[in-house]
Amino acid sequence: MKLKPETVEIIEKVIPRYPEKRSAVMPLLHRIQEDQGVISNQAIEWVADRLEMAPIRVLEVVTFFPYFRQEKLGKTHVRVCQTLSCALMGAYKVGEELEKALDCKMGTTRADGKVTLEYAECLASCGTGPVVLVDENLYENLKTSELEPLVDEIRKRSEAGEESKERSGD
Amino acid sequence: MAVTEHRILLKYADEPDYSVDIDCYLEKGGYETLKKALTMKPEDIRVEVKNSGLRGRGGAGFPCGVKWHDLVDRKSGKPIYLICNGDESEPGTFKDRQLIHKDPHQLIEGMMISSFANDVQLAFIYIREEMPLGARILEKAIEEAREKGLLGDNIQGSGYSCDIIVHRGAGAYICGEETGLIESLEGKRAYPRMKPPFFPAALGLYNCPTIVNNVETLCNVVHILKMGAEEYTRIGRPKNAGTRIWCVSGHVRKPGYYEVGAVTMGEMLHDLCGGPLPGRQFKAIVPGGGSMKILRADERFKGKDADGNEIEYGLEDIPLDFDGIMAAGSMSGSGGMMVMDDSVDILEALANLTAFYAHESCGQCTPCREGSLWASKITARMCSGDARPGDLDTLYSMVGNIGGRTVCPMGFSTTWPVQSYIDKFRDEIEERARENRCGMGRDERLIQK
Image 1 (cartoon, rainbow over the protein chains, first blue to last red):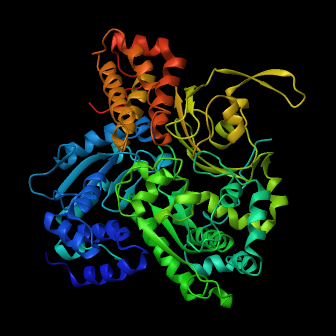
Image 2: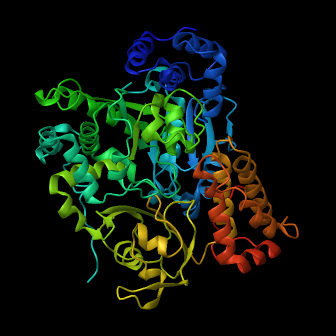
C-alpha cells in the first residue's frame, strides 16, 4: 500500500498523542480512507501492524462504523438526511428529485463512478431541514423547486479534475 | 409580554462580526475565567460547579458537580481523563453544531477549567463524523490556544499542563452513550459496557477514572465560574438552573435553536418559534430528541401547584425544563424538540423513527438488535398496507421487552416512541393501517418507498 507522504506524516504525529496506540485506530482509518478512498484488506493489515493489533480487531472496527468503507464511493458523496425532522419538511421528495437530476438511484454509485447518492440518518441540522451533505458541505432548507444550485454544485464537483478534489486544510 | 431568549452560551454566536478566531474570543473577555480558575484550588471550582446545580445537557440531566465529585479514585495516581461528548446524534438535536461551529473557544475554555478542577492532563473531544468542519474548527482553535499559552504545557506559567485531542467518530449513534464512546476511544467496537462495574467515574477510559460531559454542559462551566454559582442558580427554575438551548424542528414558522431561562412550552412554540404553519394546528410534540415519549397537543396533565393543590394543565403550560417535562411523562433529553402538525401521518412518523433506531442499534444485546428491527419491519408493513391482524399488539408487547433488558439505556429508544405513539394515537394508527391511505392533507412521505 502506497500512502501519500503527507498522510504518513500525519499518521506518525497522531499515534504518539494517544496514551495507548490502539486508540489511534479510528484516526488512522480516517486518514487512510481520505488518502485511498477506501479501506482495503491491505490497509487493515498495515494499520494492525502499525498499532500492534490483530488484523481482526481492526476489521471489527471497520465493519462496525458505517463511515468506513470497504468499497469505493463515487467521486462525490451525496447524503440526503432522512430522519424525522428532515422527512417532515420533505426530505424524500428532495431525494427523489436528486435521483432524477443526477441520474443515480438512491443507495448506489452511478456507473461512471462520479456520484454516490444515499439516504443518511440524522445529520444534526434538524432546524434547517431538509439537509443534504455533499462531501463535506452542508446544504440546508432545500426545496424541490430550488434544487438547481445544489445539482450544479454536485455536477461541478463530480466533473472536477483530480487536483481540486483534494480536501483543503488536511 | 412575549418571552425572549436569554443568551449566555450563544451570546456572541450569531453576531455579524464574531468568528471562530481566538482574537475575537479574547476581545470579549474570553479565557479570563480560565486564568481566574488557575489561581483557585481545584476543589473550590468543583464545589462551585456542584453548588450551581448544573445538570448534564446530554440527556439524563445528571448533576455535573455530583459526577465530578463521584470520581472515586483521585489519589491512586491513575490518570484522570475528561471526555467531551460531541457525538450529537439524537434526532432533533443540533445544538453542538452551533456551539462548536460558532464559538469553539468557549468549549475549549470550559474543558480546560473542568480539566484543571479535576486534575486532568489529557482531555478528548469525541465529535461525530458528520461534522468534519467542526472537527477542523476545533483543531485550529486548540492550536491557537496552545500558541497563546492557554493549553498545553505549563498553562499561563501556572505549572499546570493539559492537552486536548479531537477524536472523530465514524457514523455510529451508539457512541453518544458514554461507555460505548469510551470503548470506541480505546480503539474497539463501540459496544457499551456493563454498569456496574464500568461506571466511567471509577473504571472509564483505559480503566482509569473518567468524566464524560456534554458539549453544552462544559460550556456552562465557564459561565458558572464567571458569574458565581449563586447568580447562576437564579437563571431558570429551581433545580433546573441555568439556560438551556432548545433545538426546535419540524412544523413551526421559525424552527431553530433558542437559548432560554424559565419558559413554558407554549411560550417557546408561539412567542419564539412563531406558532404553527399557516392554516395548521399542532398535533404532537416530541420534547427531547427522537427517543423520548411523544406528547399530544390536546393532552391534559395532572399535577400540583406551589401550594400543593391539584391542578390540571395543558401541553402549552408545561415548564420547559428537566422536571417540567418529566412531570408530563416524557423527558427533556437532549433538548431536541420535534413539532408535528395536523398534516402528519403519525404511523409514518413512528415508522421513520423505528427505522432510525433499528439502523443505529449497535447489535450487542439481542433484545435491542432484534427488537428494534422487528419494530421497524412491523411499522413499515403497517404503512404499506400489509398490516396483519394483531400487529399493533405484537409490536406493543414486544418493545416492552427491550428497554431495561439491555446493557445500555438505548434500548428505550425503541420502547418509548413505540409505546407512547400507540398509547396516544391508537385509533388513528389502527385506522391508517387498515385503510392504507397516505398522509393527511399533505402528501409528504416520512418513510422510504
